[in-house]
Image (cartoon, rainbow, N blue to C red; front, side, top):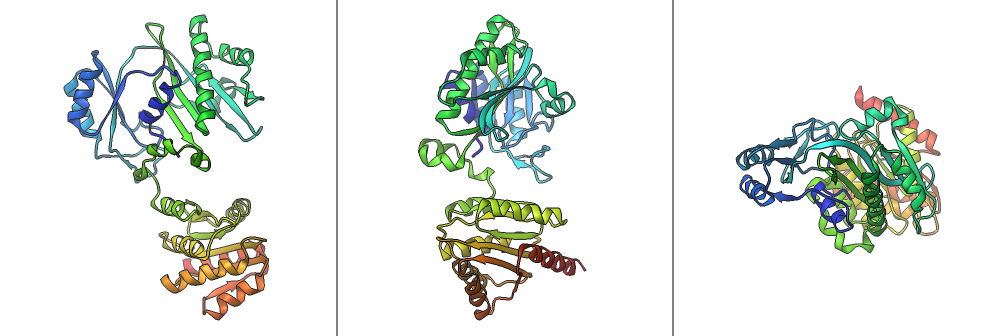
Length: 391
């Protein structure tokens, strides 16, 4: 689950991360009042959307009077901000964050994340932060410093201090940054996060260390342990299909292709998507049907796949196991087909428990499915079906 910047800052400030004073606003009037409340002579107006690249897209503005803050907020609220992460449709701005501006003398990058290459938590840092950090890192990989945390329960203070010392800060700011990193690590563990990124972490002209932009992602699979964090979910920022999938306990992600995928098991689903991509086919979704899914849940998932715009075919790749059998999935597909109809080619590859019964269920109910003996043939059938659609 993604958090807005203002939410992440409010949460991290409780752990001692130094944050500039800021107030969320839902209107130009509220923005002007926020500027007056914060005080000072300069403010940053920030569009709150779940996407990076806001600065280059005009979603972050510095203003020098409360009236100008109001004007900037009025311009942003209700607009659609298009960044390199939003796609052409952009994202609607519903709120802006008003923050005290500061004079910056140095910017660094600091993050803590799940490092899948080592199956550990790791810190990443760079002496140069700010916009285009990804491009900077690609051009000069040595800019990025990494510290893998070997003991999740006990952070090595000496190793952390050595890591922070490589980020180009002076003595006093180095110690501040070490304390900030420790706070990030505690927040990361306490909240079951998958990423907390400060970019940039700045040294002001007054020598103060501040996290002026923060990105934080929580692990959806761990939210059952953190009911208090559900309040941070912004459903308007999430894909409606993915929200619907959560309600039916389906793992679903919308993609940009034209072939729907219904698979049980995350590993099998990823392998299926890889096979399609390797053969020039673009998947329209990732779907993992859980082992304890009911017929109704399977039906809902299949209906979601059929409802995606531009679908030209659907591939069902299932492996029946001890809990979820092939015939249960077939019954769910048949239920969805009766309710919604199937107007695109449906290719089914079933293996494992009750694979023969799966075919019988679909055939006996008049579902227009094509059956493949293995996944290789299934992909070939998908290619043939989508090629005919294109013709």
